[in-house]
Amino acid sequence: MTEPITAAQSAGLDELLARTADPQVAELVEAFAGPLFDEMPAGSESGARTSRLIVTILSDPAEEARSWTGPDEDTVRERYLAAFARALPGLAPQELLFRMRGIFAVTAVDRVEVYHRPSPACPTVAAGEEARRWAITFLTAAMSAPPTQARR
Figure: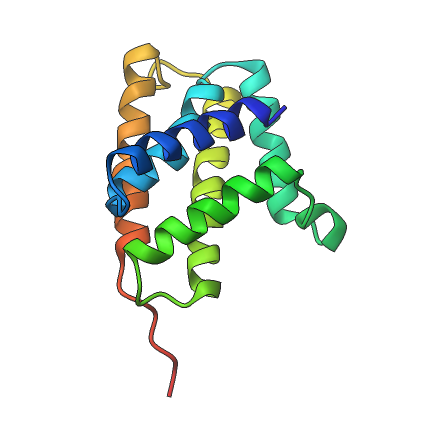
């Protein structure tokens, strides 16, 4: 169910790294989050199912569910973590992983919400692209935020 997303994320990172060894945060977010929108289009039942699966994996209290991924997903995640770590050297690995999970969460919740609450304001093809751009802008800002300072 998530294989097309993983394949597109991997291909996107391959393309970026073929152009430059150090892609910018916005390029990495686009390559990582873009396939989530592309493979889970607004109004699509299969997209909504995939979105619900992602939300379940992220939110299930059972460690087995939260840590479940296949080897391809693990490889892609590790490659993106390394690329984001180079682009955001001040972030602790734990905070970087938290932010990457946020990319999945924001996108999956949006796709489920759009599917379950159709209205005239819900995305059409053009609005779907608009929502994708909004998400990429938002997620780039979130990923680029300064490291969180420890409480004193």
